[in-house]
Length: 228
Image 1: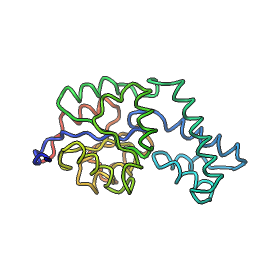
Image 2 (image 1 turned 90 degrees about the vertical axis):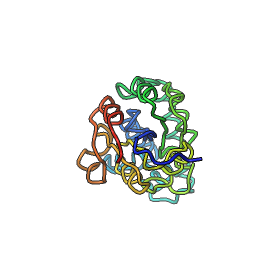
Image 3 (image 1 turned 120 degrees about the vertical axis):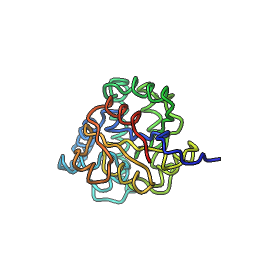
Image 4 (image 1 turned 180 degrees about the vertical axis):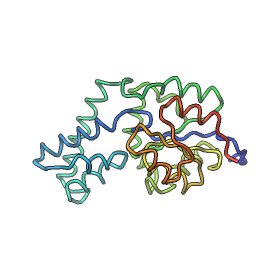
């Protein structure tokens, strides 16, 4: 049975890329390399704008082809190979400073942690396991866990239901406007992080209650936060 709304931020729902893992730069460089190998010119800003969104949609958009087109599928396979090599090489070094200790501190302070990412579930679990933080999370949701991905509320609401915590008692932490918009649509509070893909101004304009400049600041904001 779902607990009654308590006013305390008990569920903490994290985005992954650009929030826990310093992957945006790698995502952009690997994507540009894949496009170059296909003989396609790509604008770096256009590629950067796809960070944090589903891979099939990104390559479909960048290549101007349907998501099920063979060239899109080949590009996705090449990207996944490149990202897997980067992940295997960097491992826990992919995490932003303070993430491992900060997650432990949040759990020890009574918070329940979850992931809501635009990666697929399997890809997300692989990143979390390889970087050594998978066990900190009670629920992991990917864009394939629900019918509609960010900025729709589906993923956040799915996570809250799985946690058994009311949406009003959950906070979403993310670096992209889609994370913040998802939180608002789900009736959750949100904290943006300024070290990912969106600026502090963009995150606040999207509805973030506050913006943290480091993961230590995230931990402080959550442990001191209260939704009334």
